[in-house]
Length: 410
Image 1 (cartoon, rainbow, N blue to C red):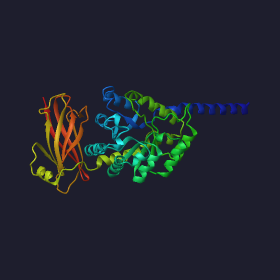
Image 2 (image 1 turned 90 degrees about the vertical axis):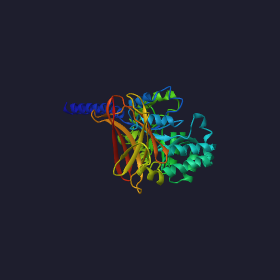
Image 3 (image 1 turned 180 degrees about the vertical axis):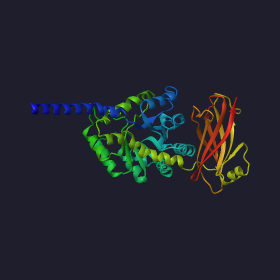
Image 4 (image 1 turned 90 degrees about the horizontal axis):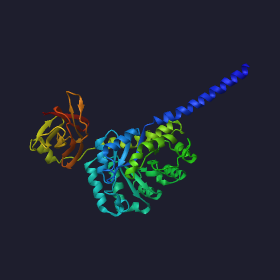
């Protein structure tokens, strides 16, 4: 009896442990943050799915961050302005969907990309569609050059041939291979072996597995390259934006079949480790600098407007329109330079808060440069009367500067 009882207890214990493991694996998977490496918010989606709704869907999905691009780039900027903690911008070369097949032979595309890179900050160029020998045409070549100059990722919806040609042009390029080229896992592994800076997103792939298992060929790919895969939704039509939460849960479903550390890597850590540092470096690089003459004029009081100075920075600004009214959007036009002729302005942010109430605005302003040290911060709104503090945060060389001024709304 004793031996039978011991066997029964042991059997029940093992069965219980197995059952608990079955319960806990999905629970752990459900808690996984997701780095979505493939979201679009293009011109045909803005009115159908408002910006606030898209951000709400992304937060409902449990996204840690997302790499976002759009046709045209204004969609990306809308999402970034609404949620800079969540959205990492990528610059798609298309100004409208119709350029997907024509952009490779359109020189104005390169000029458009150069202009956006001067005005805004990005982690990547793409997602763009590029196949075979088209990668060697002048316009795609210029995009590869620009990515190298700005140290950005290339998000390429390409076949293996085009990816090979990109690396032939720039062996140091960083490439995120959209949809893993829609290639078989064995071929994906071969490409990853050849190119150490090639990473794969798994957007819009339904071949991972089903029923709590992962396809064995994909599993081998993940085991060989645990740090080179990430998930993505690919919201290529407006209605797919509503599937962001559903796709995140789909990803968690098959990720639950992987060892915990591997599941975390693919779910979010690889995106943070690959895209995150590029984005941080991009934001920290010098923005468009004023000329020596215009900065000299600014330092000597030759620029009209309200003037603020710190130890290392000078800002002259004007409100547009003035005066500001409660609940009405306004902009701040400003000129900024390092205070010393030898200094370099590397970053500039504009914000506002109510120090007496210890809260800020309900909206995130979007700042762009108009060139030669001039900037415009759009989309500020003071939603209640009282004392507000307008804040300019500048990074000059290695030091952070905070310049503030009070504005009182009655």
